[in-house]
Length: 145
Image (tube, rainbow, N blue to C red; front, side):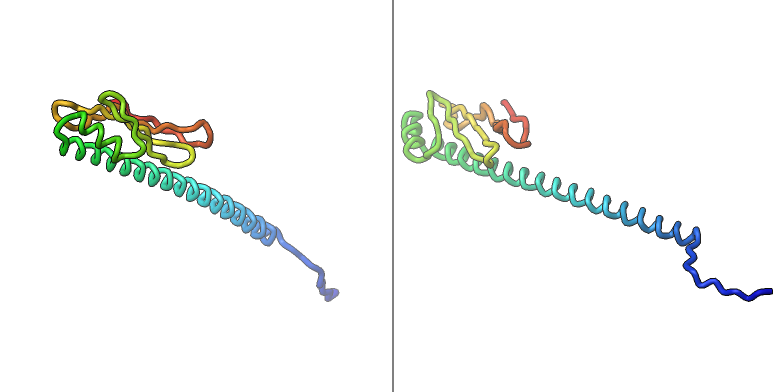
């Protein structure tokens, strides 16, 4: 018999299969990472929108509280209306209704409409609505009371 040594490169099927499996795992891990990153960005955007909404809602409630305090301290509705127009800047006073707007961001604003109750000298909510521009992807429904 002849003793021959073959020093050539020999790659078996198992080696090719292992390389293929590693490439598949790397591909799937990259896709999973990208999906997780996209989900994280979406969650962060939702958190930012909710935070802006809550901040605007808090400001609108503070304005309503201030209006109620002025009404409670006033002796008559006419006196309350004078104090309201002199004290609060961004309100529209028409008959017994008060309108004001709180900016949420560049794409949305919170519009509030209150009815001034003459008998009880307080305010009642007529509408509390988030109004959006048609630009951007920011959409919500408001509450009409």
